[in-house]
Length: 275
Image 1 (cartoon, helix red, strand yellow):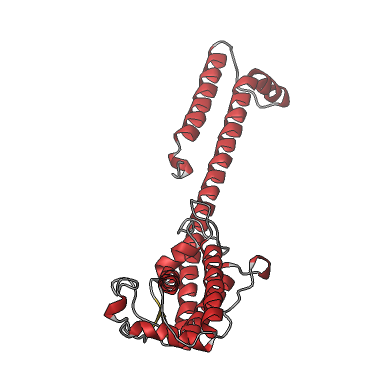
Image 2 (cartoon, one colour):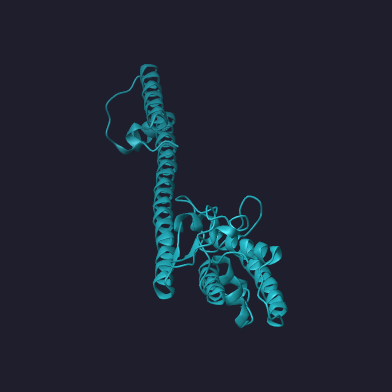
């Protein structure tokens, strides 16, 4: 799109010059083929309009077409200015939206004494199509059709259901013995927290006997209180869901685990050697 001023528009000048030159040439031809005398009365003026009607119409048409070109040019300039304004607004909204999420997460970290790492990466997961050119305040699907916050909440609920199953089994047992099934659940749960960049500031170190199940290269450590850890993660998901869905209609209910007092002790065993 050409954004030059009208004075530099070749189309405008082409129409204007062509029309004026054509009118002048037509006037010269009419004048050279007729014997005119100087006269200032009404009849002479009427004769002048009659003789020179063609160049007069050419000039009128020239000014009309040139004015029409000017209107089109001005509308293009206006459209361009609106485009620039929208882009500037999108750019500002994008930065403000990202900053708002960072503020929400910073407040959450301070309240619950946890860390949420990779805030910019998390924003891209929650709003994969947002950019400086286009911003949506409602979460949306990625290129694969997946909505990150919805999938994460679904996976969180699956972890809760499985946790409750283990809780029921271990609540009736006298001996607390970790097994490969619970170790697998713990690894899956940690992977879920890593997707969100969610970490406790203080954890128990995983004992080397359990490195085959819970690699220290991948997982930071063992939560000191697993139920508190799960509850805090659930609250983080609530915050993120409110941010992704400004209205209540799109939100789903997030539920939390049943309390099993033995589960804290079971998870704590992973920071101790195997028997």
